Image 1: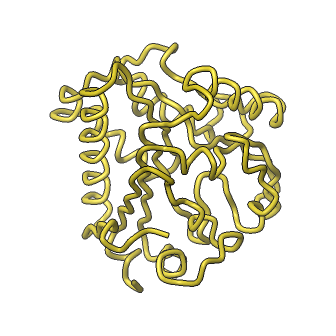
Image 2: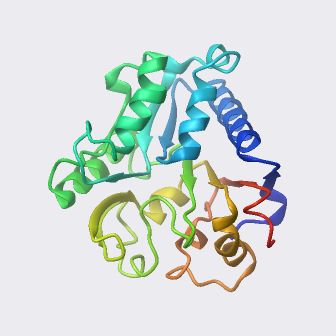
Length: 242
């Protein structure tokens, strides 16, 4: 679980988005100072949308060589890339297209394909691009009001193959299949940032950070990078019960 000194509490959703946007810029700049490319996994949802709006605007836009960033995804819904529910669609419209990112620098999960085949393909691409032990430079995640992160939902994580980097699984509470990075992939990342905003997240956030370890009940507890940095960014409402 996260160490309390790595939890940043921001006054509201706007400040939360700004803090994460600044964190992304700082980490990408630091990575590009050391290597030719930075590998960043994007998330879906309302907070990432707000973060993206800040990243494509000045001054953050010009402070990063975005053409040297390779974009990945933490999870995806099993829908076509044009579907309104697609994490790829949201990020393409709010970030990737606006930054003029070349398609070859974007690795999307193919939600329109057979879920198992799409997950296996993504696992293979991670290894092809990043080696035997794929290490993303930054994984952006959110946390749901029941403690899920990426598409790791309560009651779904116990059977995950710990050697796989990407899987497809059926989420009973949604009645749908999802494709997701596994805890193995997330915890190999050099940096992970998790956001949580809103009063509806307060109980789960307290359980994840301060409660007993129950990762099958609160999957966000599984996020603990082995040789990386974990940062939580939460607003005051979500942090009210800490």
